[in-house]
Each structure stands twice: as structure tokens, then as C-alpha cells.
Image (cartoon, rainbow, N blue to C red; front, side):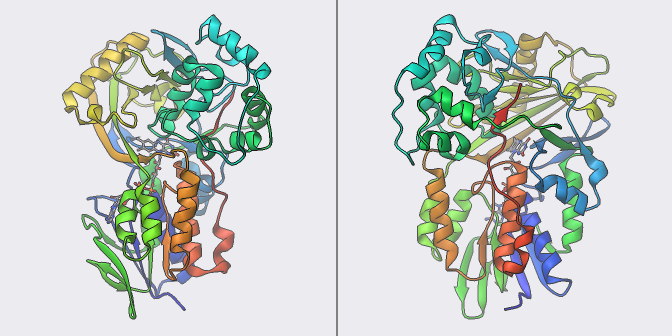
Length: 467
Ligand SMILES: Cc1cc2nc3c(=O)[nH]c(=O)nc-3n(C[C@H](O)[C@H](O)[C@H](O)COP(=O)(O)OP(=O)(O)OC[C@H]3O[C@@H](n4cnc5c(N)ncnc54)[C@H](O)[C@@H]3O)c2cc1C
């Protein structure tokens, strides 16, 4: 059937890409409507005017070795917007002092003691050294938390000081809440294949060094990509409108409060997808309802030009430290294009899964904590000339143990529903490239195999921190 009308529910990057792909495939005659409950599009992507230019106050980077975002920028005529970090290394604040972030590791998990030598004590280093001699029991196909696996083999210090800081950034989670199979698929594969130890499994799962920068960014911020997508999609746009129901009737899909359409893309976070699928796909809804979300907050600080920052891209914070912040991005050091601004920019992030209280603190407290912690970790005590506080309630899905089974159940549950596709960060990876792939895949599902060439590979981001 030729689709004449499609409703895209959720105007984050997943939904916007799905709408854009649908427009490309269906041509100008189709009516494409994007509906978002929030007062603006973009979901977890937002660029605000700040310190003489746009500054991203949600996602600020993407894995540049995946093709989706780079290709999309090119396709939209935005390749001149592609920027790369300066290549400085991050630090980790652990046991009350700064250290180079352990490297090389697989999302913080080392393959031997040398990678974590500076951040863990001698007993932990010896334990990692001896680990290959201790038989490893792993049931092929099993899934446990990254924390349980790493603590059991290498000890708690490796979890708190090397793994948690990275998982806190990618998922706003901790090693205790993120599962091995979804977050570290190559490690799970090595364990399934019978690796004799965790050290051996990490060594074989580590990606081969590749030339070129790992990460990319957008010079004027993600807002430039969102604007271009919105314009090229030429959709009917509704903001501030929460969809409250989706059901199938002989005339088509009924989307409340929009009306009847030929097809629907559901590009909302997992709990909202669960609510909207409850009647049409109860098994998929139950699986989606099991996916938790983590909240976080960002404080952007602009300091007077000339304020000295360490020569590092950022400072991650180990769990268990006496700091409120979980990470600092030293934006003016990390990104050459931001270094040219008239102010020195730093982003402080707060909030890990299970710790939503910190996100609810008043702006003044978050700003005060950001400043106090920044002074502790790198001695910057200057008075900011501008600040911005951004809260992300439920911004990141938790890929807990069993996540891939839940995603398989969601896909199986909607497979028989002609004219309905799901997309979003809870499916194939939380990173922007994976979301772009999921929006493309949702569009391809609705418009058929002819569109399969639009679909890129899907995977989590980033799984490796290279030396
Ligand atoms: C603080 C933070 C930093 C991040 N940093 C990075 C990074 O540097 N690099 C990277 O690659 N990724 C990063 N991510 C992850 C990435 O930004 C997100 O995973 C991605 O943007 C999610 O896009 P999405 O479209 O799937 O979902 P969302 O952006 O959550 O969009 C879903 C949309 O659905 C709407 N909605 C919900 N319910 C309804 C309803 N009932 N009716 C209509 N609309 C509804 C919401 O309002 C929202 O706009 C970060 C995420 C956060 C929160």
C-alpha cells in the first residue's frame, strides 16, 4: 500500500530521521506529521545560545567511526559543520586526586594491570595480574551486570575508578545497572566463545587501533542538524502535544489526539512506548515497561577569556568520591572550535541511575556544586560570566542485564503490526549514530525492502577507550 499519511510520535533525533527518510521515500504528496509532547523538538539534543554562539547542553559528540551522523551531515549539505576534538586525553578523579584515565580499556575494563596502574592500589594490580590463573566460569548466552563480572575478577576498585566513570557518561548508569551483553557485545562474544579469563576476553574483544579521530561533533551544535532535518522533512509539526493512545481500526491507525493515519512511527522513550503499545502489542509493551530511565543534569559555565584549564579534554569522577559532579567536559580544551570563543567553557554533569535527587536540586545549588567541585579537581576558582542549567529527566535508558531479550520481545511483539514501527535510544544503542540508524530502520520497515539500503549497522557507543 502506498502510504499517504504517517504520524511520527516523538521528535527526538530518532523520530526526525525517520520522518526525513519517509519524506525522501514517499515524495511531496504524503502528509508526514511529527508530534512531540515537549514544547520543542530535539528530545535529548538541544543547543542554546551561550557565550557568543550555540552550545550543546545535551549530547555534544558522536562516535565518528560509525558512518550514520557523518553521512547524514553530508547528505544534508552540512559536511562543513563536522568538527573533531583536539585529541587531548581525559583525567579521572579517583581516591581524591587526578590521574590519566586508564587506557587502553574496553569501556574501562582492562586486559591487564598496566592500563589501570595509576588508579588502583597494589593489591588490585596483583589481583589483575593473577586473574588469568583463576578458572573463569561463564555460561554461554548468560548476562550479568558489568559490575558483577569485573568486581568478581578484578576487584571493586577497577569498577569504581575505571568502569563506572565511563558508564556514568554513556548511560548515566553504573556498572551495577548495565549488562555485559548489550553494553560490551564483543566482550560477551569472547566469553561465549570460551575465553579462559576476563583478561583474555578483553584482549580479544578490544577493537584494533584505527586511524582518525574516534569522535566527531557539530560546529554550531546539534541544533544545526535538527533544523536541517526539520526543514527537509517538510512535515506538519505539533509541539506540546502528548499522544495518549494508538489503536488499529479498519480506516487505519488512530493516533489520539491527531486522528487517522496510514502508518505510525513510535519514537518515544521506552516507558511511553510501553503505555502506547499496551493495547495493540501487550507483550512488546511489557518488555518495554521493564526498561528503566536515568535522569541527569548539566551545568554549563562560561569563564572569562584567559581562565586556565588543565590540558585535558575532561575529568571523569570515580564513584564513591566526595564530589557531587560525575564528570566535567573542559569544552574549550576538548573542541578547537570552542577554544576560539570569547569565553572559556566547561560542562559539569550530575546524576547517575538511582540518584535522581541530585537532579532535582535548585539551579543555584547545582551551579554552586559545579563550581566547588571544579575548584577541587582542577583549581579553577574564577567567577563565571554566564551559566546554564539543563535537566534531562529520564534522558537515558538503562541497558540492564537481559536488555537484548527485552528488545527482541519488543520487536517480535510489533512484527505483525503492519504500518507500525518503533525507533529510539532504548533499542540498538543510546548514542546519536545508533538513534539515526534506528530512525532509518523504522522508516525502512514502513516503506519496505526498497529502503533497506538506507539502514546502517546498529551498535552501542562507544565501547572502547584507546590509549
Ligand atoms: C545529557 C545527555 C548527554 C548525552 N551525550 C551524548 C553524546 O555526547 N553523544 C551521543 O552519541 N549520545 C549522547 N546522548 C544520548 C543521545 O543524545 C540520546 O540517546 C538521543 O538523543 C535520544 O534520541 P531519541 O530520539 O531516541 O529520544 P529522545 O531524544 O528522548 O526523544 C523522544 C521524544 O519523544 C517525546 N515524547 C515522549 N512521550 C511522548 C508522547 N506521549 N507523545 C509525543 N511525544 C512524546 C519527547 O518529548 C522527546 O522529544 C546523551 C544523552 C543525554 C541525556
